[in-house]
Amino acid sequence: MKRRHILSAASPIALLVCSLGLSSGSALAATCTLSAPTTWSADSDGSWGQGTNWSGGATPNGAGVNTCITDGTSKVTRDTNATVGSLQIAHGNTLSGGRGTSFTITGPQFINAGNADFNAGSGSNSILTFGGNTSISGGGTVTLNPGDGNGAMFVRGNGFTLTNMDNLIQGSGNFGDDGLGVVNHGTINANNGTQPLTLNGGNGGVTNTGTLEASNGGTLNLNNTTTNTGGTIIGDGGTVNLAGKVLGGTLTTANGGTVQTGGTVLLDTVTLSAGSTYTAGHGTNTTLDGGLTNNGLVQLNAGGGSNVLVNIGTDVTLSGGGTVTLNPGDANG
Image (cartoon, rainbow, N blue to C red; front, side):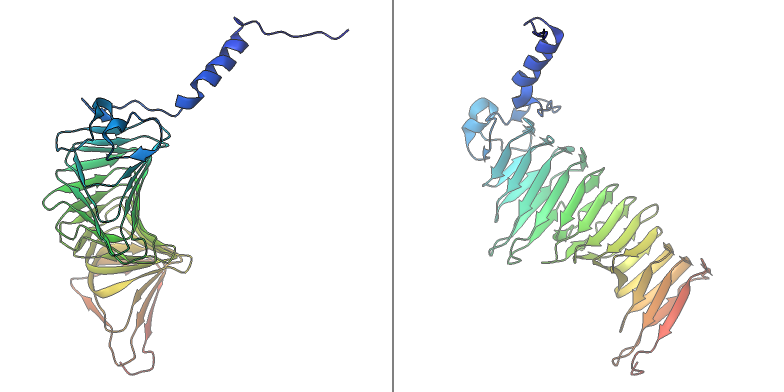
């Protein structure tokens, strides 16, 4: 005789099954940790500009308006210009910005465990502005998308500092062209080959203890002063152009990527990792200060009617057991 196993409604297993079934729709929801927030309440995808999608029935727009998108499933499409205080996006949520719009965060917190996408293209720029010193945390992804390349992304905040604690910031555009300072403990990756990602064009300063990277055929331009002590700059299937000053840290190449002098640069106490190549090409000027730990290959390429210059700014110690190659090219330079 076969025994039948029947779960009573009060049994622990039945209660667990019922609990899982009833809670599946909200299993990804997170708690909004911001004070007095306006919260996305539609529980489905929708438009930022539709007031009924928000708690209180009004679209968040104001420097003191903390804003949360934390149901864990919804994609919110921002089709208007907007200003918020602090912003929280939960894992599973996406905030997508429309072409030709501007978005300003004035508060000290941008808690992003999901995805924040900012889109340009089709003849329109888009601008992300920080109206105060802001920290990005949460381990999510921020994407700067140029679309078809007919338009650009701008990340701005003159006089303020953006601190990236742990997010992946990726794509292309002009990052700090107005003087926004950047402190990076996470990853900033130029991984869109349509346009370069240019950091620090406005000389607000970049301090990197994480990773500054070019991959997937992208180009990363580092301008003015990059303090890289404890950080890594890597061309991993992409191109990194160094200009201004690079202070400390490690330079690395992988998967056919390039790290090179982009015009004129001063390298102060930097390390080139094993198996990596640093390139100074036609018509460039590289100054060494403090020391160069060369565990790879320093490739100096002249020719084509142009010289390549390497200047010794102070007493410099060359160590690491790597190779320095002086290549005259076609000897026309």
